[in-house]
Length: 343
Image (cartoon, rainbow, N blue to C red; front, side):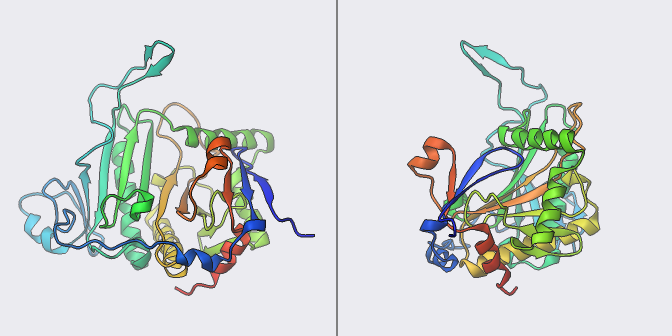
């Protein structure tokens, strides 16, 4: 008898997820979810090259640091710009924060960097770009990683993209954000600790083992090219979650070469386009999980990747009360559905 539901445990973090196939709806059901509402170009602050832009890519992928001499030409030809966030969640400071005790609690000042990566076309999300354009986005991420990783106060750099208001995008115009902070986030810490634990027990990268298993089974693969593979994780936290990994072991995203980023861009664009077409432009978040910046620790056991999480469900009492997420579509079914979407 086929299981009506399964509790699956993440091999890295130890967290449980409930794959509730007994209450599942067909993948096509998620097409009926509310779609991202388009906002007018009029009054959009991201439509023009901003005066505070400090990193610019043109349409050919050439990189510039704007100067008065070239600014007029860049205003015509820019494709991507990086600017400081106008409303930063964290502030820049030359002085690193020091943890302080507040009675039972511990705190530190929110110091770091908060930047916005903006692409030019008001309507063209990454899923609608071509591979070359998606690659430029990843190159911009890498450039900022390289610039920020050696900052004295930075321990971790988070790159993330919110698509749609339900995913937290306050501006319709496509953009990503980069936040560099003086601590390693708990979710990342759990992932790294699980990776290290597996490596110490088996002398192998757990993510490499997962990739090999997925290639052998082929039940959850959504897309792959020469160097990257995208699949719905066996322990998917939500329906249609997809993760993209380099097939060759690499701990740090920022060490990726141009050729690798081109294939990473191809995979990212392909998956987001499949979600766009298959689920009718759903809201989603994606983010990069990579090794922390240099803090004296060794992270050679880790394997960087991109996680894409569509907003296909809302946390309710069970999820909030237990921390166990429920997915009503098995990852095998989600991957089968997405594989069939032609791009």
